[in-house]
Image 1 (cartoon, rainbow, N blue to C red):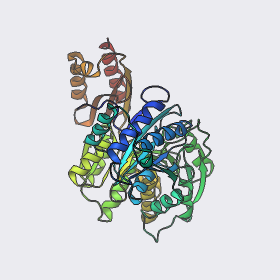
Image 2: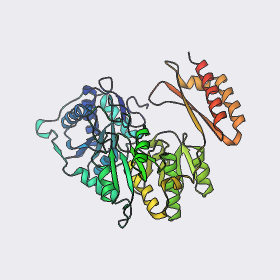
Image 3: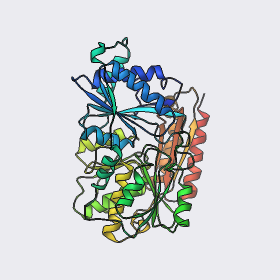
Length: 447
């Protein structure tokens, strides 16, 4: 069966427009309660980021879950990986996250974790969609679900994050700028690094419901780069709105992206004889990451873009480490899902262990120039354009020119009517030229 509402990471959209409406979200809560909370006296956690619409959607989910007879534990603002952790440790039947991650404030979304803190499988999402087709009913009044708040949720998660590095390790002497994107980590991330001894300059910690991800965070690191240089910091950390991604800035003000973070963690694990298997990346992972890992004798495999596909491949292989260029890093030897704070801690632990700076650690990997152009396709079908003979001929010509020193990638966006055109190679000038050349061919096939 084809999923109608769930995308690669839950259900997301503009608030007030289908499917992110109060009516739909209430019924979604009911449907999820029927599928995930079938056990007697079941409980489901709800957490959210700092968007103003979180209040609206939280109330709608609460009503739907109560109608299904499920008890609700409210976490308030909490990073997505924190909700995953608390779902597992509080022995809840499921956890629900109200967030649109790195999107602007006017978007929001709903995603779910199972009782073990992992994302739902396709069969569970399809079961929830099947319930959505049914008429909503309400259990007997005596069986309605009750709601209460979890006290000390932030402290529990802070202690968990700290536990992912050796107990004897501290970061005294390090100055770190921490950008919380005015999002869900604003009252958590600075304390994690302060309690481990670092001097912290906290930015992006004044959420007002409308400023999440606005000119800050992992998708907009310019301010962080400037702050690292201004404060003469050792490094900077940029989290996204829900805290599952991390981009870093070195002491020179240079960006250290998810590919480089993944390389640093993999190399560190290998040197400590703790790397279990290889590393999983995506189709967008830089060729430089693949080459750098190969030089260390570490096997690297690509999968589709999206953390659910990385998780599937890690599970299939029995490996522990994977991630995306965007900073979504999964360390299954530490936690069950992508976690920006935990991933940053693994890098800081390697800085502590090796005595190297972040710039020195990242320099072990050479990034290839990579150009991405988004081509809008309107009502045209992405599959038809990508399969077009003219487009395929252009791809083959560019692949022949790049030979073994580059890559060509065409892929449809999972959230917008776009085809993403990516060219990667050794030298920037031909990469730019070839990317524009292929983008023009794709544009010419749009109806």
